[in-house]
Image (cartoon, rainbow, N blue to C red; front, side, top):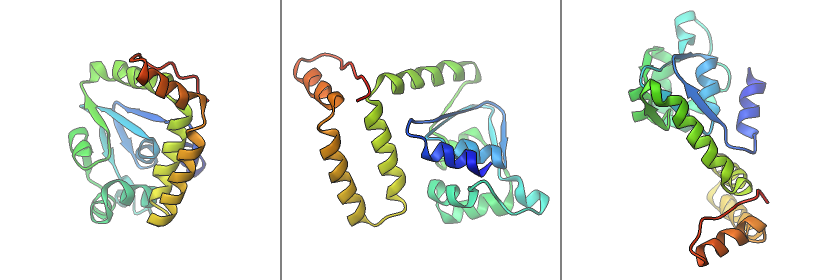
Length: 175
């Protein structure tokens, strides 16, 4: 399971989780590792480990403090209470809660938007955001400057500027 969580975190393309029912334990951590988490209004999340006298795994103790803060992460893991979709949204575990009958269409629309967008810029921005939690401010500032320089030479960046000047929608190609 940890290999899968790491693969999601390290994947260059944005990964979307679509949660319709209960995501418990490692299932919740798989969702939380994703870049965007969309949940139906009847979804729930459970840090179930304490209910079974187990230690949390699947990088839950790394993910949760980064998503909700240390105190709330402790509450989630130690109390092992069911967290409904709306509460999960309120504390920052999910990006959006939608009616169950709209979840598939919502996720498909977001996936299409990401796929049609500047995919290399998405990869770079995902990398920078993930790095920002593990390095100091000076390091991330240097890495941002480096990525701004690199991305500023890309064909998609050129297309982004040209589409702005020409007042049209950009047609990104992924490089």
